[in-house]
Length: 462
Image (cartoon, rainbow, N blue to C red):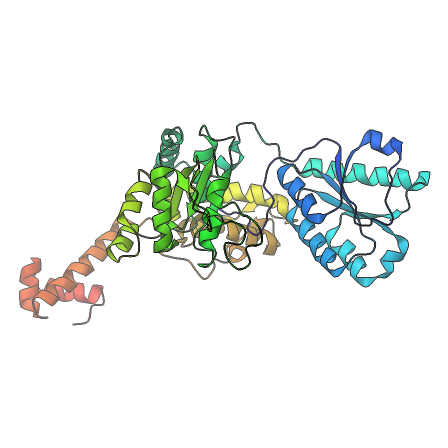
């Protein structure tokens, strides 16, 4: 399933108490909030965008304030990054009226902020307006925040389906989650392997610990060792501080190694050692560190073939493949396609102003017959595209981008199966007989006249 990338935001439920994070960037002109306001709002003041980022990653809050006067180019970029990385915080700018004369600040406020408020604060009129702005920003975020159950079912609900193949996967998740053994999830790209890993984590005894996903194929070769195992300060050029690797960060939780087939051979040795001994060594250190993390790996390639080619360690494969979940491609669970499409329609419609109320009959037919090479991820993207591009009450095949991509139906009729088999056998008979009609007819158990008729029927050239 689809996952937002490029964001550092943790995805944890937002703290909906009346808490405000105030990023104060002007030490020469401190903003002081009246007692009346501080009595109604819990205002947490910080002075650095990176500290604000760290606080919101661990404890998101609905409303943020930023003092925007006297911005440097570096602070400008940091503010943009902070607001982008905290989508569940409505940011309000505090600045003097004169700052709005600067085009860069005007653009920053217009493009990234929920609202702005002029300084200074003491005037009663200004204070009432600010409290009203804070209340409105808080209320909007409250409405926009989904209710999250204590059982963390939100992610699991995205694995929708009633087909026999997906129900088998659900059953495997229930059985495997309670164990601590490594799991290897295999399946094509876009089938939802990371969702399954998350479901295993959330159903396990480690659910209160971290879930750390790592895409082994997305990390540069020069950094992957440090990213996985960490490094000490000065271990290499550019290592200005100690870094805890992803595996160590997953202590008492789960490390999810996606695209494990892309892990370089030399690092496979280190991973094997971790699986055997539960210890790691940071780059630049000879000290072993004990790490208690469950390993779940995933791949969309055939690791057995990679072993034969010398590109994947056999001993590592057997260590990872203690328990296995094979995720079926969408074309093998055709009865789930319409169900999934309707589910994602309801889920994604909240993101758009689409007039669509559902799918047309032809759209459902096209989706049912399409091959879906991108699997569930492609289905999500096509539904999202339709909600953006569609202009009618019912989504059409054109809205989905399927009008010119109708594929062979996933379920063939008996007549189609018979014709395919018949054509294949005739070709084999001709090949075996050296294109001799008499001998081919004898081998196929038909007369020469019947064979000529079948050649015409299937448009087979001799």
